[in-house]
Amino acid sequence: MLLNFLIRNKHVIIYGISLAILLFVMRWLQLRLIIFNHAFEIYIAVIALIFTGLGIWLALKLTKPKVEIKVVEQVVERVHQVENTSEFKLNETALIESGLSKRELEVLELMATGLSNQEIALKLFVSLNTIKTHSSKVFEKLDVKRRTQAVEKAKRLSLIP
Amino acid sequence: MLLNFLIRNKHVIIYGISLAILLFVMRWLQLRLIIFNHAFEIYIAVIALIFTGLGIWLALKLTKPKVEIKVVEQVVERVHQVENTSEFKLNETALIESGLSKRELEVLELMATGLSNQEIALKLFVSLNTIKTHSSKVFEKLDVKRRTQAVEKAKRLSLIP
DNA sequence: TTTTTACTCATACTTTCGGGTGATTTTACA
DNA sequence: TGTAAAATCACCCGAAAGTATGAGTAAAAA
Image (cartoon, rainbow over all chains, first blue to last red; front, top):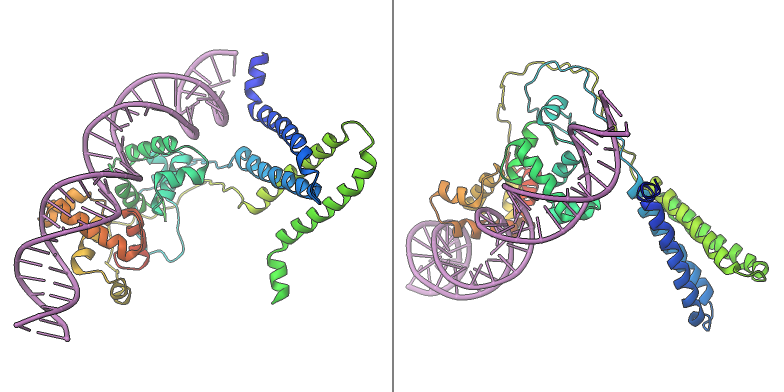
């Protein structure tokens, strides 16, 4: 349907509309900037910067991290706490068993670095509420109550370095 | 050296030069495009597109490639609770430098196990407020803002296992 | 002996966390 | 193409964490 089409191409449409609006604004701005010397160059530079930023934003937003987790075989369990010197080996088995999703693991990792939920949200380009949801699920899946416990347990299970 | 500097900032330099050239070309193009109606809009659109592309390229170029996790087969030996031969060596120097007192270090250690302030207070037979005071001092001395950061930093400094 | 330091505790206040609920949107897959 | 899981976001509310300030006490250092 048309509606479906519109929804599916939301990003593109928003992008197009933004571009149109920007063109209009720029056109309007030109009328009063034109009186200055080099206004044109400044104008172009501003546009270039804005759209470079937009491009970066687009790339970050639309790029999907192609992370795939495949399980072929599970052999044995047990964790070993080798005093790692720079060599961290993710315990795939424990990861699967924990049931953590990609995103949840990502949040957990950032959590372990000591970031607040707000900081994590900013880093991942999502809202604070989203991070709260993720972290809640992490706690649930790791069967802990606090982020400090989650980090401690995750390290013990070699889910994070 | 200068050469090194140039190489290291290759991307930025190329970007800057491209921008300059583009400005120049655009300026030149303007002279013959200006005669058409809406030439300006076309002009801007072209710039917008080019720089959007540039932004995308930049983002893709500067962003670390996405990771792909694959599990094929795990050969894990059973390590039976050899569970640390306790090879933790406290970094005395770092401890002195940090200026942490005995009690503060104690609180920090319990913190690292994921205990809440209330739990720590119960464990040490002191009031919650006392623990809050201690933890505040710990954060201050470690120059961090949150307990998760404190734990992370303390581990890095080998103040705790 | 005086001073300093560590430890203790309190009150008041702000911020962050975490639980609970519900909803929409993507994505993957059968 | 419909369904299930994952990801996103919102709002409320209570608990926990953290800040600021002040203060009393005991032990160590001067």
